[in-house]
Length: 95
Image 1 (cartoon, helix red, strand yellow):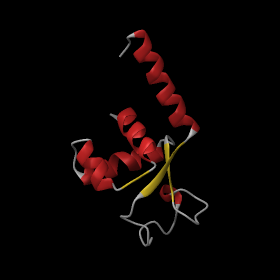
Image 2: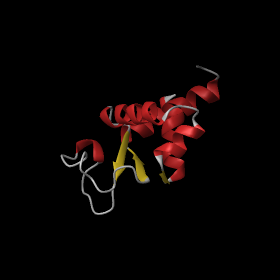
Image 3: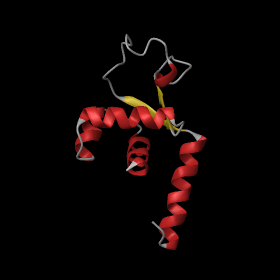
Image 4: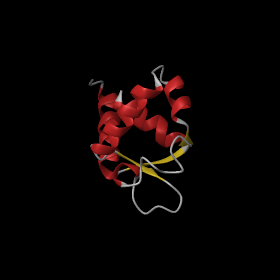
């Protein structure tokens, strides 16, 4: 599931959590928790125009004016490794 969410979030560039949740057939609350987990595990970073840090590390994240708006998601090097690993597994037929 993590890999599917990573791919979808990054392929879209910007997306509202509600739209991603609908496309993934999950609640917006569950998606928010999963995205937070992906950020904590350093697979994904949320970027906001004008900010120099990802939303997960920002001390102002609860008061942010961009909260609830479309996010630009950036795949981290760890996220790239996870997706590359899944691509190799898919090519070899591994689960």
